Length: 126
Image (tube, rainbow, N blue to C red; front, side, top):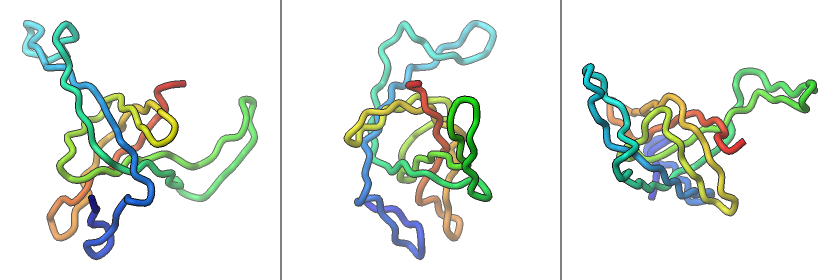
């Protein structure tokens, strides 16, 4: 299970994370808009990936009223064939079980060929 990241080689064998999520089928609401049909049985999906912190701009750590804040964000990296969509809630299992909300999913490409997808994550379990 490898990613093509730098010159065709990069992998997440050192920190693999199993992610799971449920996808409900879409149903027309009668006005031409497709919405999740929560009365139907969801399709359970599973994939392997890597969750890692990335710095947004200049590193910053500051004290606030609620504690420390940093300029780090968490990102998910998965293979190109994983069908992950913005707004989905995933469960990551790597020692500790964590729940995340997926942000905008971007395709990573080299010479026009998609090899992986990445998305920012926001904690969904408080």
